[in-house]
Amino acid sequence: MLFALQLIAQNDFSARLLYGVATQKALGDVLIGDLGSHPENLSVISLDTGYMLKKSAFEIPLDIYAKAGISNYKEGDYKDVYEILAYVKLFYNLDFLDNRVRFGFGEGFSYTSDIIRAEFLEAQATTDAKTSYFLNYLDISIDFDLGKLIHYKPFQETYFGVALKHRSGVFGLINGVTKGGSNYNSIYIEKNF
Image (cartoon, rainbow, N blue to C red; front, top):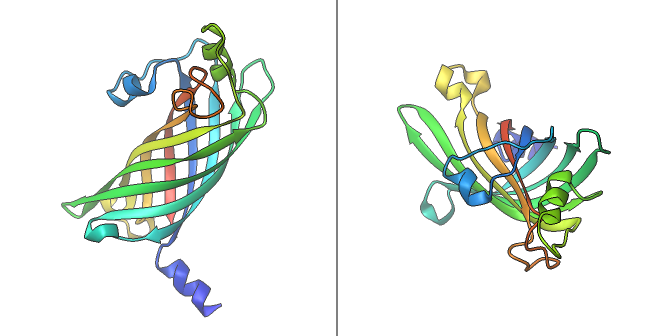
């Protein structure tokens, strides 16, 4: 029990609550700031948990986490779709003026209970495109430490940020899916404990 309390005191665990909306824009477009929107009312709510595998890896401010999560895709007039995730996420920490900004990149796998509507519509627009429940998952984010920003100690290690939640077949490498991926522009709050 003492060992478990010591782990918790070191902020090795994380929990994140995320809300996102679908966009028809491609991954590259979203990354350069062209967020776009989707004509249908498609959104996602996700809860991820994580465990820090390595702090300051390679002697640089790079933290490595193993993460897992569940998501609920709200599909408008269609049945909700559920997702399970498993991925590894890297956070590059930039500290300045007693504040912290983290740049995150995660990669892993996603499995859904049904085909996500945004993916179905993208695949339908292409001749002979495939869809799949099992796809590659990317999580690209930027956030800041809320407690350090407002100088309130109980909120330290609480991060507020934006993320891109992305599923794809990696140009056909996974289940032959070349089109039929999805992008969700998201906001989140994450707590390390």
